[in-house]
Image (tube, rainbow, N blue to C red; front, top):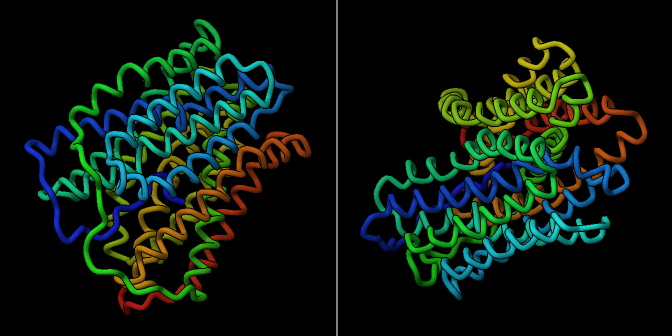
Length: 396
């Protein structure tokens, strides 16, 4: 469900570096470049590359998301054995090589293989290792450092897609993808000089095994519904807006604006969750996401476009924030890391099915069917969340 996983409990012993803010800046720049060129821009690439591969490319996008989720599971193990710099460098190389392979692919198998390789690279070079490095080395003002880093992924969704769209319009999707591969391969490795070397070992007391109870299963179900709803629109918004009459530049601008709203939404969502509790906040988020998704069907007018941008752009950034807080209330301090890991892995893998499901639903019922289905998924999550009973009396 989250666009980016939430940081876990701080380590018991934290190393420092001479200027940890330079490390934050370097990791943020890498995430902005890599996620901006890949995860956040796939929705811009898909309408142009699909005709070259039989009209459907959702399966390749699903392979990207699956590979990214699976790679993230192995990153923690690798960070503790070979260190951050080798993991990040391998991720950069895989992301660039995968995009280069996809750019020259002549059949769907090669395209899927290239995007899967790129997905592995994104998983190994952005959110998970970034959070681990910052948590390990940024002893002072860690919350602010993580906010800056996670905000880079939101900024990537606003800044990079318009550039990719312009490159596609000027040349072709293949040239634009090769340019993205070049940017990742050339700009990111020098930033590793600002990342501390050495292994990142987990320290601190061993958490007790947490029971997987009914409340956790309800949160898992709601999280899965919300992640499918978010991914379904994330990878189809540009195509759907263009199908309703918007120009490419207008569709990309609307998509970027919706992503950019994630920054203020995270700040407002955090204050709201603190005031009314994460359960009520997550219910409100689910309802807002359902309304914002349905608003995409009214994008034949500028009023409909702006309604989609405002509602969906605000709601799509919030489930990972209030959802993690609700899970913490249910699991308690000792069980939270384990259950958060299980929840994140499962919803990441199931959420990766969204692009492929979108292709199948469009083939059966046109562009409107998947939008209605994803809106219904978000709406269905609300009563599931309402059945959760947090252990804290004031958790909302």
